Amino acid sequence: MNKQSAIKVQNLVKHFGKDDNLVRVIENASFEIQKGEVVALIAPSGAGKTTLLMMIGCVIEPTSGEIWLGKNKVYHDKWLAKDTRRIRREKIGFIFQAHYLVPFLNVLENITLLPQANKVSEKEAQKKAMELLKYFEIDDKAYNMSSQLSGGQNQRVAIARALANNPEIILADEPTAALDGERAVSVIKMLKKIAAEQNVAIITVTHDERILPYCDRIMKIENRGIVFHDVDDEGIL
Image 1 (cartoon, rainbow, N blue to C red):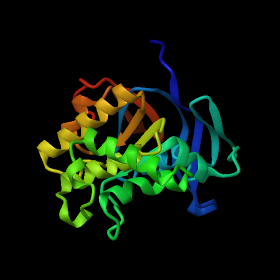
Image 2: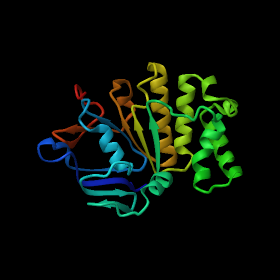
Image 3: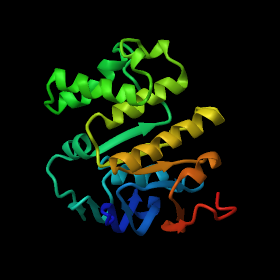
Image 4: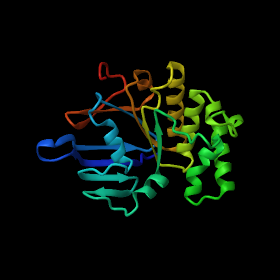
Protein backbone atom coordinates (compact mmCIF):
# COMPACT_ATOMS: atom_id res chain seq x y z
CA MET A 1 0.00 0.00 0.00
CA ASN A 2 1.40 3.41 -0.95
CA LYS A 3 2.09 5.75 1.90
CA GLN A 4 -0.14 8.78 2.16
CA SER A 5 0.92 12.05 3.72
CA ALA A 6 -1.12 13.08 6.76
CA ILE A 7 0.95 16.08 7.90
CA LYS A 8 3.43 18.14 5.95
CA VAL A 9 5.23 21.16 7.35
CA GLN A 10 7.62 23.42 5.45
CA ASN A 11 9.78 26.22 6.84
CA LEU A 12 7.54 26.62 9.86
CA VAL A 13 8.48 29.48 12.18
CA LYS A 14 7.07 30.53 15.53
CA HIS A 15 8.19 33.59 17.47
CA PHE A 16 6.63 35.15 20.54
CA GLY A 17 6.96 38.83 21.41
CA LYS A 18 9.00 41.36 19.45
CA ASP A 19 12.07 43.57 19.55
CA ASP A 20 13.99 43.07 22.82
CA ASN A 21 11.33 40.63 24.02
CA LEU A 22 11.45 38.42 20.92
CA VAL A 23 11.58 34.70 21.73
CA ARG A 24 12.41 32.37 18.83
CA VAL A 25 10.79 28.99 19.50
CA ILE A 26 10.65 27.20 16.13
CA GLU A 27 12.82 28.14 13.13
CA ASN A 28 12.32 26.75 9.62
CA ALA A 29 11.01 23.36 10.72
CA SER A 30 10.22 21.00 7.84
CA PHE A 31 8.96 17.42 8.04
CA GLU A 32 6.33 14.98 6.78
CA ILE A 33 4.37 12.31 8.63
CA GLN A 34 2.47 9.52 6.91
CA LYS A 35 -0.92 8.02 7.69
CA GLY A 36 -0.57 4.99 9.95
CA GLU A 37 2.56 6.32 11.69
CA VAL A 38 3.05 6.86 15.42
CA VAL A 39 5.69 9.53 15.98
CA ALA A 40 7.06 10.55 19.37
CA LEU A 41 7.91 14.25 19.73
CA ILE A 42 10.60 14.85 22.33
CA ALA A 43 12.67 17.81 23.51
CA PRO A 44 13.66 19.47 26.79
CA SER A 45 11.00 21.40 28.68
CA GLY A 46 10.39 24.80 27.11
CA ALA A 47 11.78 23.81 23.70
CA GLY A 48 8.41 24.21 21.96
CA LYS A 49 6.90 20.70 21.82
CA THR A 50 3.38 21.74 22.76
CA THR A 51 3.66 24.89 20.64
CA LEU A 52 4.54 22.79 17.59
CA LEU A 53 1.71 20.37 18.32
CA MET A 54 -0.80 23.21 18.67
CA MET A 55 0.33 24.81 15.41
CA ILE A 56 -0.24 21.52 13.58
CA GLY A 57 -3.61 21.32 15.36
CA CYS A 58 -4.62 24.79 14.09
CA VAL A 59 -4.84 26.12 17.64
CA ILE A 60 -1.80 28.43 17.69
CA GLU A 61 -1.04 30.52 14.59
CA PRO A 62 2.53 30.19 13.28
CA THR A 63 4.63 33.24 12.47
CA SER A 64 5.27 31.96 8.95
CA GLY A 65 5.65 28.79 6.90
CA GLU A 66 3.30 26.19 5.44
CA ILE A 67 1.16 23.37 6.86
CA TRP A 68 -0.71 20.67 4.95
CA LEU A 69 -3.19 18.34 6.61
CA GLY A 70 -3.76 15.50 4.18
CA LYS A 71 -4.09 16.98 0.71
CA ASN A 72 -5.25 20.36 1.99
CA LYS A 73 -2.89 23.26 2.62
CA VAL A 74 -4.32 24.94 5.71
CA TYR A 75 -1.62 27.54 6.38
CA HIS A 76 0.67 29.62 4.18
CA ASP A 77 1.89 32.63 6.14
CA LYS A 78 -1.76 32.93 7.22
CA TRP A 79 -4.68 30.55 7.81
CA LEU A 80 -6.19 29.62 4.45
CA ALA A 81 -9.46 28.46 6.02
CA LYS A 82 -11.93 30.92 7.48
CA ASP A 83 -12.87 28.55 10.30
CA THR A 84 -9.95 26.69 11.91
CA ARG A 85 -12.37 25.27 14.48
CA ARG A 86 -14.01 23.29 11.71
CA ILE A 87 -10.63 21.82 10.71
CA ARG A 88 -10.08 20.73 14.32
CA ARG A 89 -13.55 19.24 14.60
CA GLU A 90 -13.40 17.33 11.34
CA LYS A 91 -9.76 16.28 10.91
CA ILE A 92 -8.05 16.18 14.31
CA GLY A 93 -8.45 14.31 17.57
CA PHE A 94 -6.75 15.66 20.69
CA ILE A 95 -5.58 13.67 23.73
CA PHE A 96 -3.99 15.29 26.78
CA GLN A 97 -2.23 14.26 29.97
CA ALA A 98 -5.41 15.02 31.90
CA HIS A 99 -8.50 13.42 30.38
CA TYR A 100 -10.61 16.62 30.58
CA LEU A 101 -13.86 14.67 30.51
CA VAL A 102 -16.90 16.80 31.32
CA PRO A 103 -17.63 15.81 34.92
CA PHE A 104 -21.42 16.23 34.78
CA LEU A 105 -21.79 14.07 31.64
CA ASN A 106 -21.54 10.28 31.61
CA VAL A 107 -19.02 8.41 29.47
CA LEU A 108 -21.36 7.99 26.49
CA GLU A 109 -22.36 11.67 26.56
CA ASN A 110 -18.72 12.77 26.66
CA ILE A 111 -17.93 10.79 23.53
CA THR A 112 -21.01 11.88 21.57
CA LEU A 113 -20.56 15.58 22.36
CA LEU A 114 -18.24 16.40 19.42
CA PRO A 115 -20.01 14.35 16.72
CA GLN A 116 -23.31 15.97 17.65
CA ALA A 117 -21.65 19.38 17.43
CA ASN A 118 -20.70 18.30 13.90
CA LYS A 119 -24.41 17.70 13.15
CA VAL A 120 -24.23 13.90 13.47
CA SER A 121 -27.54 12.53 14.73
CA GLU A 122 -27.75 11.43 18.36
CA LYS A 123 -28.53 7.85 17.31
CA GLU A 124 -25.55 7.64 14.95
CA ALA A 125 -23.22 9.32 17.46
CA GLN A 126 -24.26 6.87 20.19
CA LYS A 127 -23.76 3.89 17.87
CA LYS A 128 -20.22 5.06 17.04
CA ALA A 129 -19.49 5.75 20.73
CA MET A 130 -20.60 2.27 21.78
CA GLU A 131 -18.44 0.73 19.04
CA LEU A 132 -15.44 2.63 20.39
CA LEU A 133 -16.18 1.70 23.99
CA LYS A 134 -16.43 -1.94 22.96
CA TYR A 135 -13.15 -1.61 21.04
CA PHE A 136 -11.51 -0.33 24.25
CA GLU A 137 -13.27 -2.99 26.36
CA ILE A 138 -15.09 -0.51 28.57
CA ASP A 139 -18.58 -0.61 27.03
CA ASP A 140 -19.91 -1.67 30.44
CA LYS A 141 -18.92 1.83 31.68
CA ALA A 142 -21.00 3.73 29.11
CA TYR A 143 -23.40 5.20 31.67
CA ASN A 144 -20.85 5.77 34.43
CA MET A 145 -19.53 9.18 35.38
CA SER A 146 -15.79 9.81 35.02
CA SER A 147 -15.46 9.99 38.81
CA GLN A 148 -16.45 6.31 38.93
CA LEU A 149 -13.62 5.23 36.60
CA SER A 150 -9.94 4.54 37.19
CA GLY A 151 -7.23 6.75 35.66
CA GLY A 152 -6.55 4.21 32.94
CA GLN A 153 -10.25 3.86 32.12
CA ASN A 154 -10.68 7.63 31.92
CA GLN A 155 -7.76 7.86 29.49
CA ARG A 156 -9.38 5.16 27.34
CA VAL A 157 -12.56 7.23 27.27
CA ALA A 158 -10.52 10.30 26.30
CA ILE A 159 -8.97 8.35 23.40
CA ALA A 160 -12.41 7.13 22.35
CA ARG A 161 -13.63 10.74 22.40
CA ALA A 162 -10.67 11.76 20.20
CA LEU A 163 -11.71 9.10 17.67
CA ALA A 164 -15.40 9.91 17.70
CA ASN A 165 -15.16 12.32 14.74
CA ASN A 166 -13.15 9.83 12.62
CA PRO A 167 -10.04 12.04 12.55
CA GLU A 168 -7.18 11.69 10.09
CA ILE A 169 -4.71 12.87 12.74
CA ILE A 170 -4.41 12.42 16.50
CA LEU A 171 -2.29 14.86 18.51
CA ALA A 172 -1.45 13.64 22.00
CA ASP A 173 0.26 15.82 24.60
CA GLU A 174 1.90 13.67 27.31
CA PRO A 175 -0.95 11.10 27.25
CA THR A 176 0.86 8.62 29.53
CA ALA A 177 2.49 11.00 32.02
CA ALA A 178 -0.10 10.40 34.74
CA LEU A 179 -0.15 6.61 34.31
CA ASP A 180 1.98 3.88 35.84
CA GLY A 181 4.25 1.72 33.66
CA GLU A 182 1.74 -0.97 32.74
CA ARG A 183 -1.04 1.49 31.92
CA ALA A 184 1.32 3.76 29.97
CA VAL A 185 2.42 0.89 27.75
CA SER A 186 -1.22 -0.18 27.36
CA VAL A 187 -2.17 3.29 26.10
CA ILE A 188 0.67 3.52 23.54
CA LYS A 189 -0.08 -0.01 22.30
CA MET A 190 -3.67 1.09 21.87
CA LEU A 191 -2.60 4.15 19.87
CA LYS A 192 -0.33 2.03 17.68
CA LYS A 193 -3.20 -0.35 17.01
CA ILE A 194 -5.47 2.57 16.11
CA ALA A 195 -2.86 4.03 13.74
CA ALA A 196 -2.47 0.71 11.93
CA GLU A 197 -6.14 -0.30 11.78
CA GLN A 198 -7.65 3.10 11.04
CA ASN A 199 -4.78 4.59 9.02
CA VAL A 200 -4.47 7.54 11.40
CA ALA A 201 -1.29 9.57 11.90
CA ILE A 202 -0.42 10.07 15.56
CA ILE A 203 2.06 12.52 17.10
CA THR A 204 2.60 12.12 20.82
CA VAL A 205 4.59 14.59 22.88
CA THR A 206 6.36 12.65 25.61
CA HIS A 207 9.10 12.52 28.21
CA ASP A 208 8.23 8.88 28.82
CA GLU A 209 11.03 6.56 27.69
CA ARG A 210 8.78 3.53 28.24
CA ILE A 211 6.68 4.28 25.18
CA LEU A 212 9.46 5.04 22.68
CA PRO A 213 9.97 1.40 21.54
CA TYR A 214 6.33 1.34 20.41
CA CYS A 215 6.70 4.39 18.14
CA ASP A 216 7.66 4.24 14.47
CA ARG A 217 9.91 7.30 14.56
CA ILE A 218 11.18 9.82 17.06
CA MET A 219 11.06 13.51 16.20
CA LYS A 220 13.19 15.85 18.26
CA ILE A 221 13.38 19.63 18.42
CA GLU A 222 17.06 20.57 18.14
CA ASN A 223 18.32 24.13 17.68
CA ARG A 224 14.68 25.17 17.06
CA GLY A 225 14.45 22.80 14.09
CA ILE A 226 13.32 19.19 13.61
CA VAL A 227 15.57 16.12 13.57
CA PHE A 228 14.38 12.52 13.26
CA HIS A 229 15.92 9.60 15.14
CA ASP A 230 15.42 5.87 14.74
CA VAL A 231 13.56 4.22 17.58
CA ASP A 232 16.62 2.20 18.59
CA ASP A 233 18.89 5.26 18.92
CA GLU A 234 20.31 5.57 22.42
CA GLY A 235 20.61 8.57 24.68
CA ILE A 236 18.32 10.87 22.74
CA LEU A 237 16.19 12.11 25.62
